Length: 200
Ligand SMILES: Nc1nc2c(ncn2[C@@H]2O[C@H](COP(=O)(O)OP(=O)(O)OP(=O)(O)O)[C@@H](O)[C@H]2O)c(=O)[nH]1
Ligand SMILES: [Mg+2]
Image 1: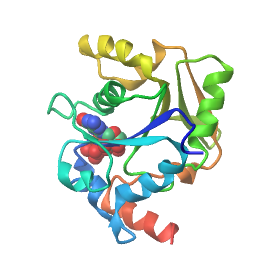
Image 2: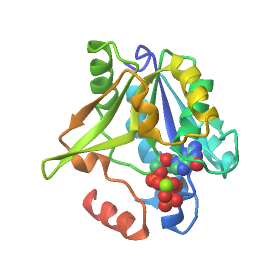
Image 3: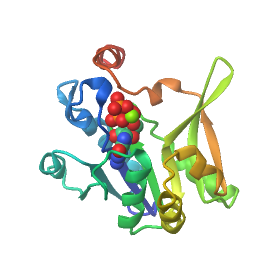
């Protein structure tokens, strides 16, 4: 399957991880392996190729054999800075983003987002989850057409960084996933310990 998806997977590992004490979150140990490895393993069968977006420890990330791309500006301006670099380096028709800190990400993420994108002839589809009857956007789990580079550059050049505001300028939609746990992410040492226990 991986030779025919037309999708580049972008793993976002470029954040500050302040709630984790400012260390490089993608490299902290999760079941004795760097956290990003779980995200790579989940994403790899769903895409043609992978890009890693990181702003620190670039040589360590390069060890996985995929291109490592840094944000254009070194100011940690948020995930859209990573999206922008992903789109600039994407050589396939679609880009699928996922964060480095969600080791249980859905194995059918690409398939479901792509089906929605094609059905609605959309430019971008992001994941959502439903908790207590309320729908929550999971905007960093996002499939988009790679031609959106022009749109994102224009949006960022206005000084805006809000991901949901960019989405509203596009032909976009969402897919609601039932399995909330697949989107569990690790922001604090406590969340890391809890998720390790849960996914034993
Ligand atoms: N490229 C890039 N990615 C970012 C940036 N800020 C956050 N991200 C990524 O966006 C995703 C969601 O961000 P958070 O979960 O808040 O991670 P974080 O910002 O590193 O952590 P906190 O500092 O604790 O908020 C993660 O995959 C981050 O790596 C940034 O400035 N640049
Ligand atoms: Mg953050």
